[in-house]
Amino acid sequence: MQSVFMGVSIFYVFIFITGIIGANKIKISRKMRKLSFVLFALSLSLIAYGVTPPPNWDLARHFEWLDIIRKSDLSLFEFLFQNKSGIGGWLYKNLIGFNFLRYIVAKMFTTNNAMPFLCVLLEYLIIGYIFIDWSKDNNYKGRVNFTSLLLCFALFPFPYAVSGIRNTLAVAIVSLGIYQYLYKGKPIAVFIVFAAIAVTIHPAVFFAVPFVFFVRYETGIKGFLIVFGVTLFIDLATTYFASSGFSFLALMARTYKHYTSENQYRGDRYALYGNVLIIGIFLFVYLIAKKNEGINKNWDKRQIAVYSFLTYYMCFILGNIGNYDMVTRPSYLLGVFSPALTSLIVNTEKKSRSKTKLILYIVKLAVCGICMYVCYKHTIILLQGY
Image (cartoon, rainbow, N blue to C red; front, top):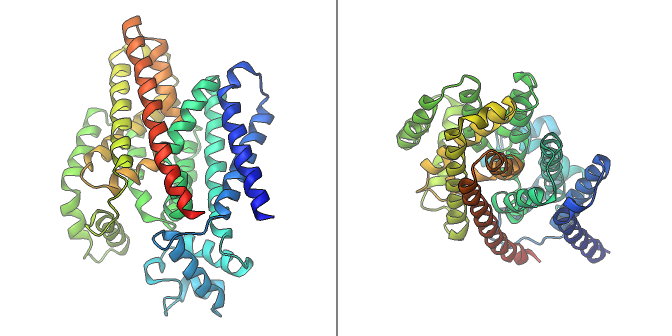
């Protein structure tokens, strides 16, 4: 039965992508788009459910911890706040959000595969919401959505959403909070709630939070100088805070040190180079957009806020170009915001002169080509789990 569900899921993913490519010729209602994305998320989560993780995947270690949690006699409250024996791993002891999820999965399901199923389902439902909402407001057609989909799978890799689960889930949640605050105009309390949940799943997502406030307080060129300044001295700062008495700052510093150590995974250089090229291309497009002052007058202020945030964030990523994980992992957030990145090219192209339009057309082809190659390499990694 599982193989049947797997086959149907793969078939629907193929149909969904084909439908996205041809959507510019077919009028689709908003309800149908919502339903198609829900089924798309469900199909991907069923594919994730069928994974048998190799020993080198984080998911294999998560499965081991789930077995230990399932056999323990701790109540939910004891597991979250009184886990003195470190059941489930000392590394995750203070991550309340992640521990809540692990406890629920361990106690309510007999199979550990429910963990990647639920995480992937939630992640791609969030991505689907942003895709549909952004596309609705910008009246995009299928080809633009297809470019966004390519960007999403290249920058928010499905194999890592399955194998890592914790990082990608936290990124999806904090991205939703950022989107609600900057684009939908929700109160800052909404953003804080989403950010707090995300940080208690994986503290590394906190690196995205300061750039939200850079946008709100219109720091301008000073903000970009601060970003590059921080990336130059962040290693020294984390060395100091790692041994400080402030538990949260110490946790953040140790997280940064963990992901920049020489013991971290350094394979799959295509992901590093692909991300750097994509980020460089979009920063180039943003500079063209800023140079054409007429564009800013025609852009929605909410769009400008999102574009500014993504630009600050991309500068931060490039400032860490020497650190493999500090380029690839933060780029997950860019994958969630792929519709906004695609629209940056489209909006700039619409208001540009013919020569610039030709350059931007070549840029779109380059982005698609890079994304297709990266997605192909990601697919090879995914097949290791089957």
